[in-house]
Length: 204
Image (tube, rainbow, N blue to C red; front, side, top):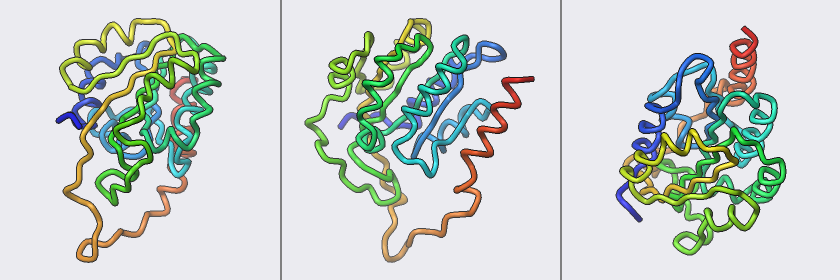
């Protein structure tokens, strides 16, 4: 895989996200939750947890409900495989304000257990999205190409699908010397709490 990390891609996105009435809504799942909240904390961030696989459908709903605001979904390859049919739903609905970004890192639970995702190295998610009916699809394997394309991508009518082929991090993978920590209760109420915060911000 390319030497291209999820956190670098999200840092680039944060610089082009916009502000005020032009600030994009960001739906994040898995590893991208950590990086978007570090690079661009905002009441317009919503974490798709513990609904693994639901980011694409959640993003579609938000894009349809907020047609005047850009919506960016930060998804994972393993998560998308859990709800692959959502690509057809998104293409059929045709929200012009939606950009669906999928991090193709080849693993589930990056930097935790790094379980291999089926089809790694063989699956072209951008090609799948194109076949599902997305009018605009792209595939990048380096931060430079992604960063240079971002302004035009965010200004282009969608729905847009972007596959980013990234390198999974592995320095904190759980093992017998570093076992899985208990998940805090807040992790299970997080999406609802953030959703209510987002609604208040959009209505203010």
